[in-house]
Image (cartoon, rainbow, N blue to C red; front, top):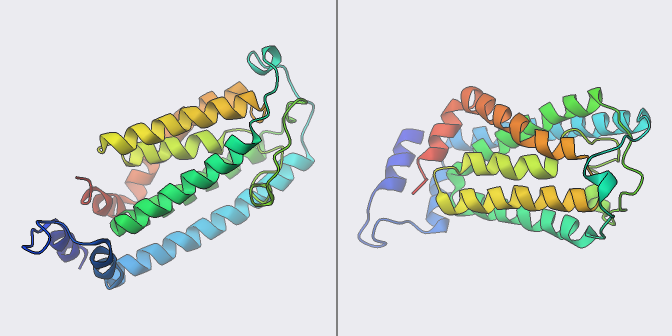
Amino acid sequence: MRKDTKTIFNAKTPANSGKLSILARNSLCWKDRDFALSVLWGFIFLFVALVLNYAAGIYATERASNPVTDIILSNIPTFDVDGLFVYGTVVFWGFIIFLCVAEPQRTPFIVKSTALFVCIRSLFISLTHIGPFPTQITVDSNILAAFSFGGDLFFSGHVGLPFLMALAFWKDTLLRNIFVYAALFFGVVVLLAHLHYSIDVLSAFFITYTIYCIAEVIFKKDRQFFDAVIH
């Protein structure tokens, strides 16, 4: 059934010169049982990943050791970029939701690859218990406080997730550039705020690339469905 849906989405129709409305695209996808089940399993996977992230974050924070020196953080002052950190995160996820609504075929791969990212990051932060840098800013956000605990440093999710989206949307030059710049933006922000060590930021690019490669293999069908909507 997915193959038929893909064909319909790529077909030209006299009414819209080859492009269906957002409502029509969503209607086609959500009527597809395989698509709906794939999204459902994706969100179940994401829920489990977030539970693991919560447990790993609490564990790492409780067992955090002393902070260490850092070649960047030790040589720059702390900047109050709390607003950029919080609202930048809100804008980022709002944009992801918009892309999923605009092209719903993207949703299964985005949700599942994000869940895989969160799971693997949970493993990393449970293994590494370096204490937060002493001059880090206090982030005033109840929502982000539910996902970040202070000791969950390695590696940076704020850098890794935008880069994961850049890899997913690599064939779309505009979106690729937007997400690459978003990853660089968050990298600068967390360093200016002393929220992450430089190794957390730098390693995020390399680890995220590996996560993406794994996602392409284990979510192959979802990746193929995703590619069908890249113009």
